[in-house]
Length: 326
Image (tube, rainbow, N blue to C red):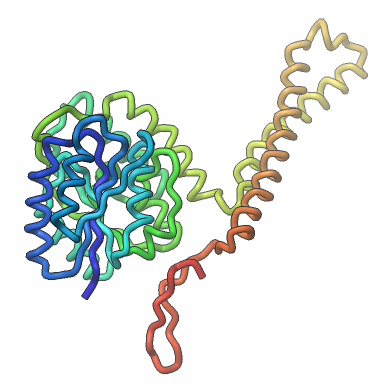
């Protein structure tokens, strides 16, 4: 029987915590599987932590992690994932916009053999201009950048096999890209429609400004998925193009000079452009080489591998479950 871990990052969610706890407990008890619930308090300033501390005294399934300061949702999720002991880990928000009753649908996909079951807010109740449209554009860009076709990258409501999620290091705001990052190691991802309901209290912690930060994350994830183990292929292309253009321009100007013309008076800006392109190309080559060295240092110093093994079958046909790092 698989052990379940529920990871819930919270920040000032006091009004929603008791209803969430009651509904979540009812759902988990109905599954008749061993479970734990991990709340990660991201430095709330209301009574969220006190309320959860009282619940811990009465429920042995609960664990509360309190961060020293507000590190953000990605860090809170990472703390919960690191502490989780379950074979399957489910993450969801603490504001009750994710309904605990949808958890069985996510787990059903995991039981089918998928490594990640990602929630899809098929019918969103957000503002069309400030949330729906930017979200649709961002999700399309994420799909194109990562190669993982999901309708809803942004939702926290997902279920993971623990060996998959524990092999992913999260930084910045990359929690929304976990399916894409996991796909790098061959994870199988399924999408499950979930309900999206209004917050019972308070306001959203996200606004239109977050959309612009997503653009930077998309560039980051594209680089990580495509060029992480071969950065020279990225920087080298740019460097080769810039170096070739700069060399052609300067070669032309040298021949022009040998023909008796005055370069500075007639083609001064072109000469400067050629010199800048040549220098930029050499710098890109240097950045690529440094990237190659850093990539090798990252993998070799930590004993990590650039591949992940799902299982090993012996002659007797018995699968050997691995931790995904060998």
